[in-house]
Image (cartoon, rainbow, N blue to C red; front, side, top):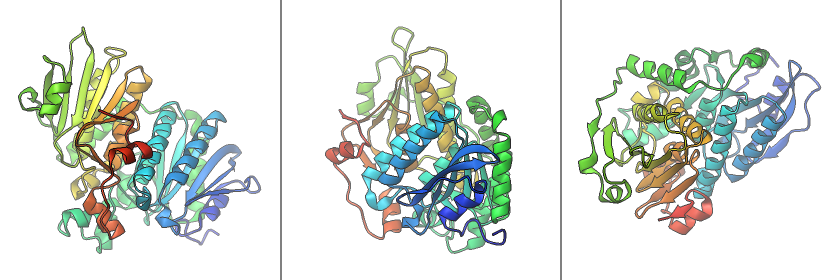
Length: 419
């Protein structure tokens, strides 16, 4: 077995190879994923493994609902949770229902990660889109040289940015950008190993053996680490500037008079006075969100955390999704998106009422990162929610998708309330 490739093996074989001999309960199939329980080094664990031969290992409604249940059970029983991921991300052909189900799944994962559930991501061949957000939320990731992880896959980056941004047919360039070695180099606790059963098993055993020392993420330390990475790549924060005079008319009606709003690196932020404590944040420029913008918004949220318990937090969104650029993938955009989602979830768990208001476009991982932590997601007139930007959908599905209506949004669970 040690001579076989871990990343190329069937999902049930990966699970069996990782578990102690004879400990595995009968695996259960949920669409593109297989789930199993057993022991690793004598420790009870839960594992899931996605099947790249079933819809590219993508996660639709059935997979998201099953994963939510398994995560809850794992937390209740004190079992570490292991993701064996080889997945294209959300199930695009299921449309908005898949996005709504992934929103609920990601909310569970964020809350349980902050509650101390130990999660490990074992990356097979591909880990794109929503799957990369699951991996980035884990305490640790294990890669091989065959692994590729990114918010946007190579074909999507080329489709939206052109071959000058990334030539998806240039395997060496793709691996240099988003391959396992490049990703493991960015995070000191992540691990690069051979693409073999023995190597992945050893890495998993080492992680399990150290589980007693794992603690929930320190978001402030994580924020500093991610900021240092941006600076190393020349991505410098800009000085804030006043935005109160050029807000869209819709926001002028929503944000109370007297609140001083600012913009910085594509982020809107401002806070009300002590008599009516409310904080306002958002991406409202109608442009894709990159790592610097996600980090900036997370930083503004961390700055207010703990100052005024119970302060309401309103987040506005008008963005077609994450930035599909070489520059943003070079710093591992997935980790910045997951970090922002964890920060917003921590605000809600610490008594802040977090609301997302969609006032324009909303799509992909940026929508999920803001919607999953929110108590409610509201659609303002002009809201347009999609799984991915239309150009990316057309590139992947090779057909154009029709925009949904308000009833579609609410039925799919991507919007809770219409204003």
